[in-house]
Length: 361
Image (cartoon, rainbow, N blue to C red; front, side, top):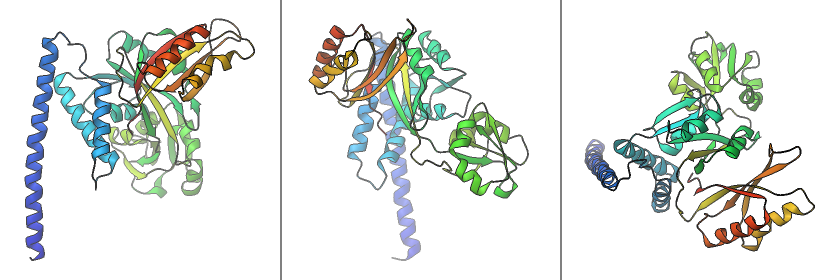
């Protein structure tokens, strides 16, 4: 068969597959609408989003993916399909740490997909208030960075709220140089958050040694300025480039390729077990020799791994602290239930912050 005939035949098959994909996608969307009707008939009209169900679907896709598509590509495609179908049932409003174009917005899109009503808010405590007051169904807040450590405002906000953690997002932070100018040598000033400038110092020293480095309040603000200031550029994420119509001149210019930020998804509803979960707690104990050891002993006794512990001032008295703890498993798991029962007998206070699926990717 001649080359031209082979290409025509392959393209014909691709067109046929595309038509079948479109038919199946709309069939799936129709089923999603039927699910919404069943829930409404049962009086469940609050929120159709099920974090545990979504995590199970994405893990199944990842496990059954035969390739050649990478697992993360397949997961992203199906996340967007589920996001679009959920928007047909009921649009999901999600608050994030703004302004628009931040990595927190990128994390929100990664977790929920693009078909959400994303609301930028200027502070972490405002996100908590928006979700608690019902203005948004969920919120996305940063909690820790692999190089900068924990976000204390987020931890402190959990002390005085009834909101629960319903999910987590792990986002590899890639800093991109973006501008309206196409030539790197034309850049005279670079805008970005001070931390981002520091995290890209080696690249800037090498490729833009004479450009002025101007710290601003956020990477998104840097992108906004780069769109209007002549001969300037910004260091920011891909969402900011799309939002402010900037061209990415260089990708992944961060000095540390493993720079990662973990975000938490907060909401009102508890999440069911998926088989691969985390549980977050905040606990306190009296200040005495061996108190912390005794506090953590139930986890060892029940063979439960602790993935995180962080201390914060309790705000109840000078030199009194609470401990934020992440453990493996769900509160409904037998071993976790038994460990928490033993923990409550030893601690002055135990507050369950939520059990939620481990980040899929």
